[in-house]
Amino acid sequence: MTQTADQTLAIIVPAYNEEDAIPVFLRVMTPVFDDIRASGLTPRLVFVNDGSRDATVQAIAAADWPVDVQLLCLSRNFGKEAALTAGLAHVDDDAVVVMDADLQDPPELIAQMIAHWRKGAKVVLGRRTDRSEDGPLKRKSAQWFYRLHNQISSIEIPYNVGDFRLMDRRVVEAVNQLPENRRFMKGIFAWVGFEPVFIDYKRERRSVGRSKFSGWKLWRFAVEGITSFSEVPLIMWTYLGALISMLAFLYASYIVISTLIFGADTPGYASMITVVLFLGGIQVLGIGILGEYLGRVYSEVKRRPSFVIAEDLHIPARGGSDDG
Ligand code: UDP
Ligand code: MG
Image (cartoon, rainbow, N blue to C red; front, side, top):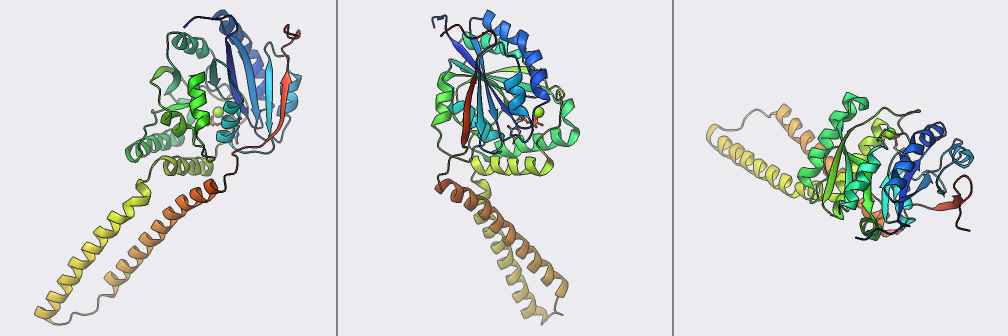
C-alpha cells in the first residue's frame, strides 16, 4: 500500500450528557492528535451527540479543537449503538477509530493501532485485560454474557472487547451494508469478519460523570445481543417440549401400571400442583422468548431508520483550515 499525504483517520465519539468530559477529552487528546499526524494520517473528530440533555453540544462547539470536528446531532437519545451506526454511516476516511468520550479506553493506544493497520491489519481491537475499575458485578455478568452468547451463537464475540477499535475503510463499508435497524454493534462487528489484531490494555476509570448503563439497560443489551445473533433460545423449546412430553408419558405409564397392580392410590395433590405450576411456568417462559423475537421481527419489518440526524455541523480546526 502506498502512503499518500492526505490519508485521514476519523475518530468517532458517541456522547450522551458528557458536557464535563469534553474539556478533559480535548486536553488528553491534543498530544494524541500529534502522534497521529506523526504517523502520516490527518486526524479528525466525529462527535455523535446522542440527544444529550445537558450542554454537550455547547461544550463541543466552545472547545478549541486542533483538528476538524464534525458534530452530528441526533434528534433524540437513540442509544449508543445507534449513535455509533450514525457515526459510521457518515465517514469515508481511510481508517476509523471508535472510542468513548469518557476516556475509559486509553487514547495513547491509537498510535499502536495505526502501526498495526499500516502493517496490513484491517481491524485492530482493544482488549481489556484488567477491568478492576468496572466493579465485580459488571465484570462477572459480562463474563457470563460472553460465554453464553458464544456458546449459542453462530458468530463469536471476542472476550472483553468493547467498541474501542480501529477499522479500515473496507470494514466500515461492510458494517454499513448490514441493513438491520436494531443494531447490536459487537455482534455486527464480529459478523463482518476480517482477522483482528488485539492490543491489551487496562480499562481506566471514567474521567468524569457516571456510566449511562444501569443494571436494567445492561440486561436489555445482553438480551438484544443474544436474540440478534442466536436462534437457540427460539428452537430449544422444541427439544424441551419433547423431553417434558416424554417424561410425562413415562410417568403416565407408571401410574396406569401401578393402578392396575396395586389399585387406586390416594390422590397426590402436592405432586399434581407442582407439575401444573412447573409446566405453566415453562409455557409462559417459552412465550416470553417468542415475544423477544417477535418484537425484533416487528421492529425490523417497520423498516424504520435506527437514528435521525437533526444537525450535521462542521467546526474547523483552530487557526482555520488552510484548504479554502
Ligand atoms: N452513550 C451514548 N448514548 C447513550 C449512552 C451512552 O452515546 O444512550 C455514550 C457515552 O456518552 C459514552 C459511551 O457511550 O461516550 C459509553 O457510555 P458509558 O461510559 O456510560 O458506558 P460504560 O463505559 O459504563 O459501559
Ligand atoms: Mg464509560
